[in-house]
Amino acid sequence: NMEFFYEKYFNSHVLLSSYKNKFELVYTIDDYDKKILKLLSKNSRISCIEISKYVPISSVAISQRIKNLEKSKYILSYSIYISPSKIGLYQFYFFIENRNLNERKKLYSYIKSHPAVCSLIDYIGDPFIEFCVFVNNPYEVRKVIQDISSKFNDNKVIDFLFTDEDFISHGLPQCIFR
Image (cartoon, rainbow, N blue to C red):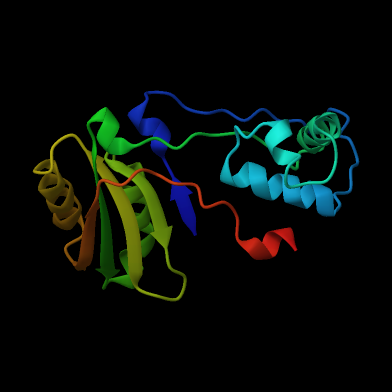
């Protein structure tokens, strides 16, 4: 289970509108659409002309296919990846061992709601939880861990990682596009 909470850092929430009552286009994708989706998943700003270098159809046809993919909800939205260091944030990943499995749901909920946490991964069947923290100052990370530890003292930080690398979209796994 993986969740992301990047909107915490921009004081906004993304609301997805419901289309249940609207007519949805029935569209079956083919190999060309899969190639288009693969390219868009790696770079959502790629032009139709650039896509046409990899998919042997015209840029106009590619544009129409993208519109069909959007209308039929194969493409739900487009996003950007932001470099935390460029906006003055430090990014840390933590791996903790949850030793009190009776408190796991409470711990998960608490970490998820923590203002510094931007993503959370819960490994099913394992006592480990991984989460990412953004802080303005590297010394603030200690406060975050102390805060979590004070409320859930049966947990142990197994490892942590500091990274100043940009977010990079690796796209979906290759098996999706077969």
